[in-house]
Image (cartoon, rainbow, N blue to C red; front, side):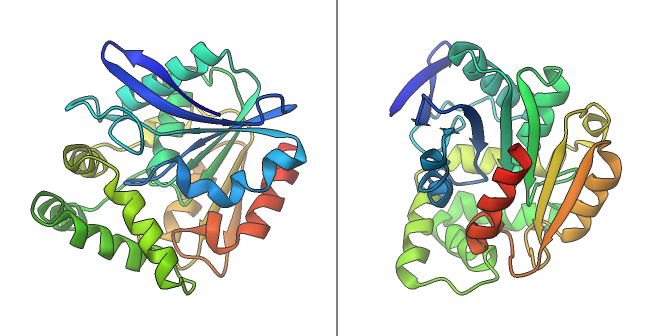
Length: 260
């Protein structure tokens, strides 16, 4: 079922809540510039194994409201906190992909891990996001030819072959975002880092990263695994930036084993 949660005056986030009666809860944070729909191939499987799966579209993306401000990691983490409080979530697994991984890290450090029992970082954009060079290129495209930018994002995202219908679906998902929120996140990924947050993560952490990732280098996953106390790194040898889809059966099985 889908519904909205108000996170601040005039800003509502869209929530997809699948199998609310499930015995264990997983909260999914998507990547830039996508939406909760990127986890379709988790939502097809995990709820039928007894899990409650909650997908959150962050502000500016998917079906959520698209205000002109609030695109720093603190505010994005505070939005998640509001959703957690309103839904009274506790003892849940937090899964963050790419920029969603960065938001998940900031959520835990800023809110003392509120409600999170386990953390899963998938091709996370941490401890740093975009280089100045990459950010400048994306920013120019986002503000002048956003469809061209999204086409390039799609082409560089996956290591495995994707069909043209899948590519089109993925491309359109990225265009659901607002232009200004797409640009604002590029600036956040360029200017903010998460080094200071890592020591505050005390929950068991699973790090999944495609070894062929062209967006966030695999070396960053290695750095995360060294700096997060209770972390385990699992390389995905046949994936780029989309391990959640490229090796979905392995990913879903690993997630279930980790959650227990």
